[in-house]
Length: 284
Image 1 (cartoon, one colour):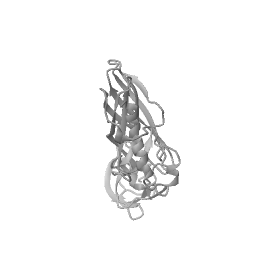
Image 2 (cartoon, rainbow, N blue to C red; image 1 turned 45 degrees about the vertical axis):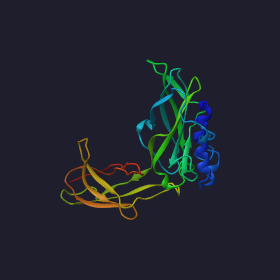
Image 3 (cartoon, rainbow, N blue to C red; image 1 turned 90 degrees about the vertical axis):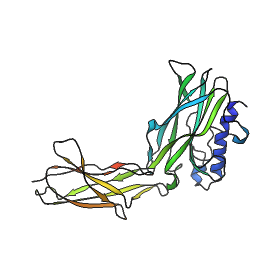
């Protein structure tokens, strides 16, 4: 069986899996991420996963960085696939998906298909057998990220086709992190303040709620209070503050010198990092 049928198989399984999952109507609207994951279309069970000498040697998603999304703004990321075959590489295909496996109904609850019909492939300058091919994927949090449980590890299915029309498909060749965006604010007062007096530093930590398309307080999280003395270029962590049940932050420190205060949230396995803008306090 030639690879066109093989590659077609992965997204057919993905589309069927998504179709069996209860998702919002918007996700079944024909946009990428719904049941229209068309890049790979057909029946995986009838296809071998590899034919010929095609090998996928490297897959890089979003330049190796995590994918962080808020409530409404879309984000386009690039997937770079390096593959090799003696006759050369003709095309690659990919799907980003969330779940346990592509073949069991109900085991996939999210996915995003590539934007292009064909990848842009560039042959290596040292070997015509090797090419690096690039595809883009656009995440729409309103359509594709319909529940907060989709935050975390996503799998990457990739197929590569050689110029002789043989090739290979990998259902989960690598993974990437898709996270909820976080925001943090800061306010240090009073301003100005006498040296040795108490400064109260308040703020709030929130993160995107994909189910409601709004931001909400992120509770019981450790957030660093940092200070940069005027005239220096480095922030130092003064203490760690725990967010309240509403995401509120509050602590006190002694005024020692003019400088900038900020809150720094390092992120979690499901939520991206966030740093507040700096608040300058003049110490008299």
